[in-house]
Image (cartoon, rainbow over all chains, first blue to last red; front, side):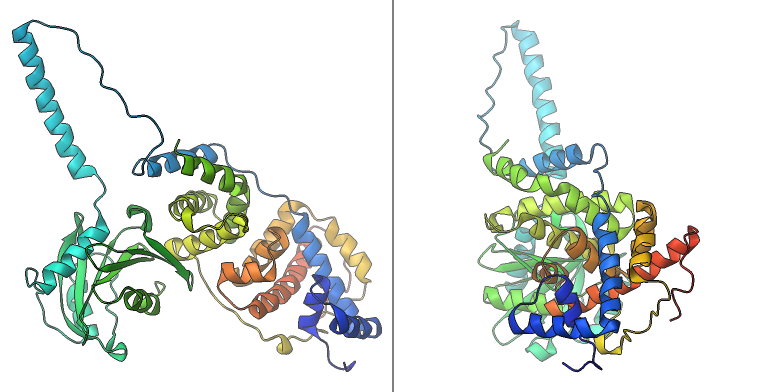
Length: 270
Length: 184
């Protein structure tokens, strides 16, 4: 190692104990005879020690209990080990009062069931799968047959309140075949379809988070994105987040093809 | 409590301070750090079946935390890559001895060091937070940051150099004698 060249990357490895054998000996020998590198190591070590001396920050009060409560909420949708709740026994009542009571309970139950059906989280993967099935069986049509990504994006963007990105799959062998605005799980979504030789792909974007989704059948984490993969209705639905927007690519094409297309096209919000 | 949640809580909750600390140092905002921590644990719970027992849970949680921070909170992901060979190792010429300077910096308060750390660009700060403060290996940090190991190394180098300069700046402002130490 020439004394005129300073092995900066090796200095970092040296101070973090990542060198061994001949490489370690060569770098140590260079440092012993090089005042520039000695000084460099002194500066880097001083900075590292200052950072490592900082204490771990304490958790804010309530954060742990808040997280545990949210885990409990999330767990409610899953099979529980807790025993089933038994029905309370009712006291005997006079017949007329009894039927009034039955009627009022029935009404309250109907209201509760309606509220539950309205408020419960929608199964968004099943909804996306249904849209694919409806489109391929011609029960769902697109408003526009626009095949240019930018023009379709402009047309759809004017009808939704969130940022939209109609991506081009021409290089992958899929051409745009139109789009529309529709509803998915009571949310407004922009949807568009791609046509390929092997079948259709449906993409939808709407406001949401991965936490809104049920437990995925598979998860892929790559390029700083988390992809939730579902297999509903003989198809594949791949969800990911782009800022506040939840995106889904759904199709009855081979599962891995759909996943890889989603991974290739996911993009950070600008 | 379901057995799975029980197992998740026992495995992952002990690292909540690490997740929160890293999220706070990366975002600089306590409210964002709290939300990111909660989202990280929710997401980790939903994908807990993919966590391999025996592997590093802290590193797994920090990977999810970083992804949440970037995707949900639009955490700026700038890559001010400075090739190592463009850095002039002689750019900080010190008149006082290295030992004296280290002693001066050692006297800085924790808030001063936190402030110096916060002044680093995000990409560099994340390397220091993960490797120097959360004790991740270069390989684990590379997985969290989704970049090659060599990039972690180069960011660490730049981060420590920038941190050193920022610490010197704080030492001067705090009135410690660092006469003539820098002429870059």
